[in-house]
Length: 230
Image (cartoon, rainbow, N blue to C red; front, side, top):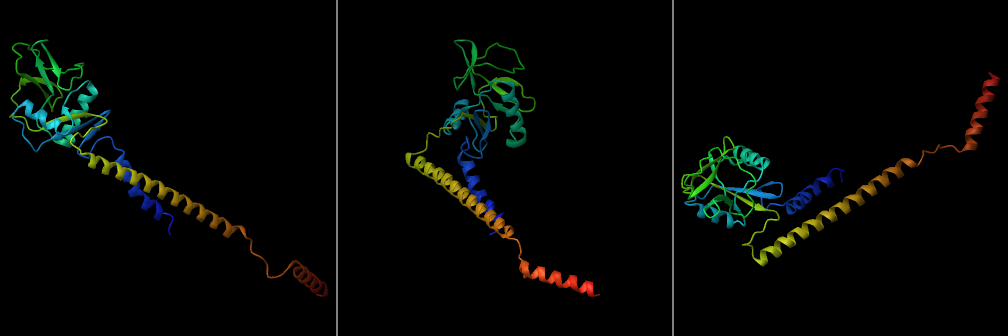
């Protein structure tokens, strides 16, 4: 078997192991730091409550942003990968009791990029991320004109609608993948060790002359005598 054959056979196993160890649930999600994000385009939200339920159905919540790096990541991913609309609903609401905006996921409001500072009559006011500039803008919570919902889930991702049977199957698949990968690595190590040993043995035996040392000496003496007679 060629030396490159076994590594080629191990690549699918290693790929499965990498997928099994991934932090986000599928390739539809995108990871940034310790969170996973997904942009849901297929279903149109008729209200902010409807948009939030789309996220909670996936074990997530509406988008919250906590620093400039995260805001930039969301902006770039919307432009390059998700091809999002001009505005995305932020997962916040205006709390009239505290006269301040709060995130639905109960995280602290430590960052903002408001373009408008008008704080008059903020009842039923929501926040929107402008996907061309990355700035935030206040608007009415009627989101029927917004296409798509951006959701965010903390790692580890918890898929709450998975049954115990599905969780068991997933665990067995991961365990089998890791076992097969380890077994393949052992087989490859033994194969390489055997190949290197055979290669060393083949070249460690020096070729022997068809004449022993005595014959070589006699032949040399005859040649020397022949030269003297000449």
